[in-house]
Length: 105
Image (cartoon, rainbow, N blue to C red; front, side, top):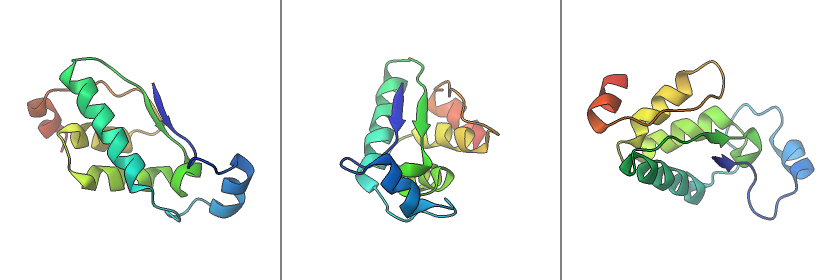
């Protein structure tokens, strides 16, 4: 399990005040996006499963964070992020092979 919750050093209450109403990314964290994609790539390489949570308090809009990570295009993990983004709720993502991920696009 990995959680993208808050920028290091930022208090939860401060993030709530800064980001409400959570309608857009207000504080991009590209390093965190890259770290999450690297984690996804490693999980896929090991043929494991993982639960990745992204919170509105990380950048201001969790769906926007996921879309931005998807556009980073570092690995085939972006296919999994597309499937993750389209779910109605945050749920586990079973990592697939590159061919299976391409079918999700």
